[in-house]
Length: 274
Image 1 (tube, rainbow, N blue to C red):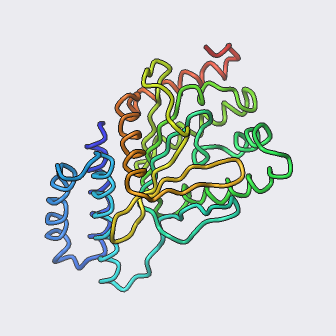
Image 2: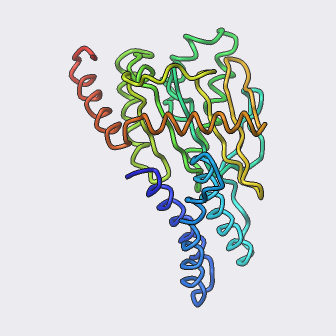
C-alpha cells in the first residue's frame, strides 16, 4: 500500500470514528461530506512538500473528531504529548502524527525495554542511565494509549543490523517491530544499505504534527542528555523534504516486514547474521 492510500485510509478511519459519536440521522451524511474533502487536501498543489499535505489530511480528520466529541459533550482525550527539552517528561500539547527517522539506532519510540537499556549502557554516562530509561518508559505511553497518533518511521538498515545487547535482545526487538508493523496507525519502512543519497545532516530526527488550529509541525532532535526543537519554517521545510526523500528511497512496509521475519529466523536458529 502506498503512502497516499495509507493516509486516506487512516483519515477515513478517524472520520468513521467521529461519525459514530453523531446522531444516527446525520452520521452518514457527515461522513460522505468530510471524506469527499480528503483527496483535495492531499493533492493541493499549493502545499509543499508532500509530507505537509499528509499532515493536513490527518489534522482535518482529527478536527472533525474533536467537533463530534463537542457535539456529544464528551471529554477530549489527548492523542499523545510532545517531548520536553529534558529527558524527564513531556509537555501537554497534543500531536496527531509522528514521523521518525532512525540513523545509527532504532528510534526510541520503537525500542523494547531490553534494547533501550542495552543502548543506554553503551551511549550514556552511568549517572544518566536511570533518567534515560525513565524517559523511554514515559514515551512508550504514546504506543499504549487509547487513541495514539499516526506513526510513520524510517529505519536505516545499519541500525537494524547492529547487534545492540546481543542476539536475545535483538530477537525480542525484531518481534516487537513485527507486532508494531501490524497496527493500522503505524507505518515502518527500511532505508537500505544501497541508498546513495549520502548521510542525513544532523542524523536521526522526528517531525511532530501538532494537533492545533494551524496544523503546524515541530522538528525534534534528540541528544544524549537533552532534546532540540525547531519550529522555524525554513528549517521545518528542510526536514520534511528530507523525510519525503528518504521515504521515496526506502523499501515498502511489506518488504520491511518480510526482512524482519528473515532476520528473526536467522536469530532463532543461531545462524550468523549477514
